[in-house]
Image (tube, rainbow, N blue to C red):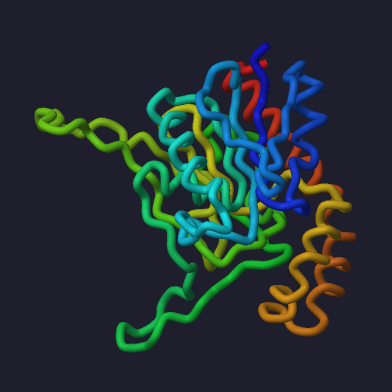
Length: 266
């Protein structure tokens, strides 16, 4: 039976609400715990959709012997791209999709600096509002600008683009669509979410977390919270979770429902 395969990189960033929602649609879910030694699928036989979760490692760690699964994921995602296979990447997962498509992944920095000034890192951790310039896209139907989403990343990416085959004739004018769409942005990070081709989607922020998941991430990432938000950062995030979580949960369920129903994978 075909199923959803979830690739999980660390114990504290699991599929969250994705699992029960997919099961409600009749889609069996199998979680591969890569950090425990589970294998990245060697092929796409029986994979109805692929979901790639987050983690503290990055595309720059591809080739690092600590994370042997990253190179295998890139190779698998390249096959997904070639087949336009339903794929969802969250946080690190979005960066891996971008990298597999040949797009650049790099540290997010503050915009507007003078050319002679060194770049200033602009990590995003905690609750931040997002905008949806791609609201006509089915994946983000029902979303509204200013929605608070949960962020935990240092890097960003360029939007992946379709690469014409070698020796292909020049396209007619006007050129065909680029094969991508920007779905979501924040003030300090433009490329937050994207569609590539028809059925691959990347989200830099998390929309799948339960309150328990947020606590797990806070516990595992205390050093990041201290570095970015200061000594009271964890308290701030917990207080904001109390305010934002109910609506966040509804919007997250909507995104997952859009994904499944738009792609008709159930």
